[in-house]
Image 1 (cartoon, rainbow, N blue to C red):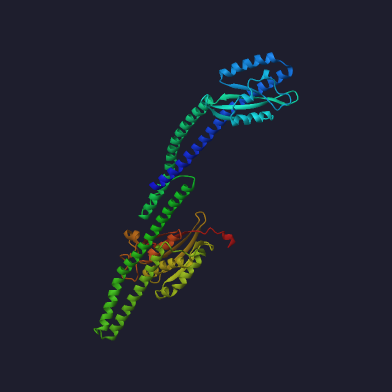
Image 2: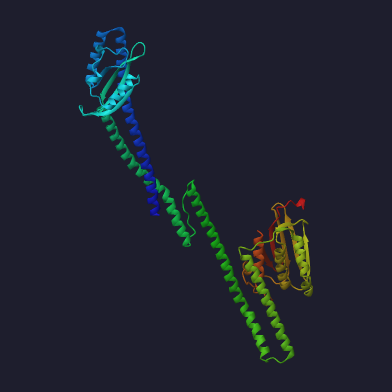
Length: 489
């Protein structure tokens, strides 16, 4: 990440310094052109004024006034080291008189650039150039301007020459200030680049650290980055990924725990029936039992133990599926009365063998809930089977369905009269492998009520039990009623 920081810092620094340098150079050149241009304009205006004054004096023959004017101008120019040369145009029909000129072309050894701007002036155009003067040992600017007569004929030319030293000094001074500003700006730019680079790279470094934490299996942290840009979006995605990984890890642990519980329960609970079955089978195989009646008794016991193992495995599988986070219920609108009647019909034969009478009663025909028909039926079958096993002969097993519209619930009560659950064991009824002390050796895996409780809770319901000598044993299940509009059904 340090490499990224350095690269971002360099990129920022180069861009900002380059931009600062470019702006500085542009402003320096602009200022130089402005200073030189202003001075050229001043010399041009001076040359124009002299040209117009000479033209007027020539037209009015005001020689004396012209001399006084030129004397004053020469004094002014001398104070500013400015020279003014007035030439007569030899090619004019009526050239400027000698009384108005102060220099003759043939008397001077003019340099090529001077001849060029003088020639332009004789043609009625202005001209200028800058060169180094060896006499003054300084850069000089030369500006030429034509002199016209009353008919607009070029009768002469004026050349004004001024030193560039002060202007060059001004440009040089400005350049020094500009270079200082550029240097200062460059330092500030680097500092700003350093700050901005840190601001930009810091969240990237944090995201990298967080990614390593996730890779190491620590999903509980967050990036802690709150930004409204692409990095903020990336940080939010990383935080969401961590949350999903936490959920996935929790799910995995749940599945793994279910798997361990299942195998632990199977190995624990199947050990006894398998041992008993193996003992009976070994006795038969080794020929220790020769009495046909006793052999049949052993075979029946083997069959009973196999039935016990079958029920146990079935209950364990059901419980394991219920505890699996992937387990889904087939939810639909069902009438709890119809489910109870269906469960009751399936147990009529067992009830008849014991001389029991079963009855399903209800208060409201439309006792509707959102539920899985098969699972709700399984709950009622478990409760009715327990009632069949533990109730006294020739008694009633009652299932009563009621609906409480005010509370928005539908309840189902399964009651019987028979073996009472001890008061001190009521809280253990729904524990795994629980068998009451009054069980009396009756068949059962000890998982039925736990499975029933899990199914009820999966339906957002609640199951409770009460038991005493007077009222018998009652299991009460309360479900939320369906959200469907009953009138539309």
